[in-house]
Length: 477
Image 1 (spheres, rainbow, N blue to C red):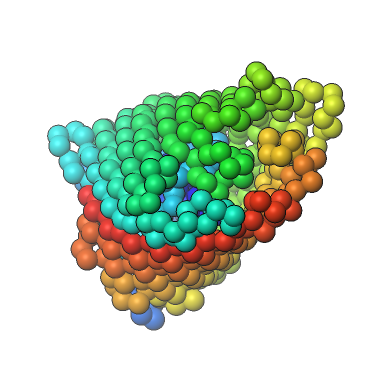
Image 2: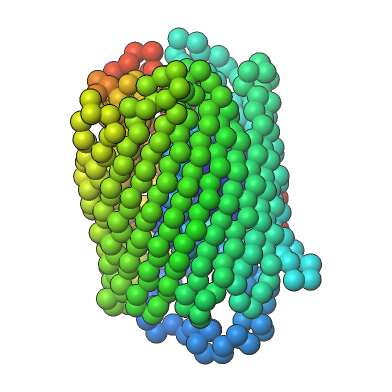
């Protein structure tokens, strides 16, 4: 689901980019990155062709003094972009639907994003953000056998603090999200997250990086794994890695540890620890064409007390190769392909694997209209309906139109196919979304959206459809 995927990318990557509620999707940026439209250009002007290999490197050109003379807002932007690149090299991502995601909306062009400049006090820059909004739904339980209309009011407050330093980096972030249901307290939620991250520059092009975060949130009613008993989820994550950024070569080596604990009756099967070792090497062959390779090793350990969670203890091996190409100034294309294999400790469970990969294409039709098409196929261990593994295929289409410098509309369609091995179950999720955005000033954005969600499943009691209307405002600095 678009709202779920958007929130997850926001929560685990860059808390300062947006609020968990109504407009969090405005600022989402993911490892499957090209999900947002380009900045709008003046009417009739062609997008510029930038030669990445010939860009001036501020460190190479001016040394450390060049960074000292940079405007604080420029430092913040550069650090944010660098942090995103580093995370794409060394950081793994979770996939748990969250209750707070119900108030998110479609993506919007970066030209309408509020804030992002920050407030500077001495050597520290703060990026605060606040959102209030409401969701109207005709199926708050995501269950056709128990359909109920409801209105959920929500609010989010978040802040990120970054130290302004010539070298190295240190940041901290925190967010709290609350929602209250008009019809019943069982749909209320209170989520929070907190994290710190830092970078130690070994040389001008290499660094050591680390991040620690904690999150507590209410699992969404539509979550497949919840099976009707959504839980409060506690997630603790620690990530560290080494990154080298060259003119033509980039290399990243990351180590990740994630601990997930569930409060519901299925916690015996679902509580798990995951430890991942990953690497990525990329090479820019020309100014418009680059390739990469990425191996990954993951150890999954499930808590088997009182259940069959021990059957899911496993080792996953994944290998990917990919390309990224600028076909023309208006068309950008990226693709990856590989294979993922799971080896289970339980001899009764057969080894299982699948081809995995992704495809992303973004086309700027004119100065105001952008198209995006993406597809991905992933493989993972699961506990849904006694299945051992899940193959998920996601296809997304998106059109973004700038109506005026301060107005934009976004149309989005997403299809998700979830196939559960050994569980004799296949789910088809379809989401359609239409969003309107108006930026009153650089710090204030209004959002109005409509979403339709439906699930077709082999399990009759898992099928549902839902209509949602989302409205809200975000203030950011």
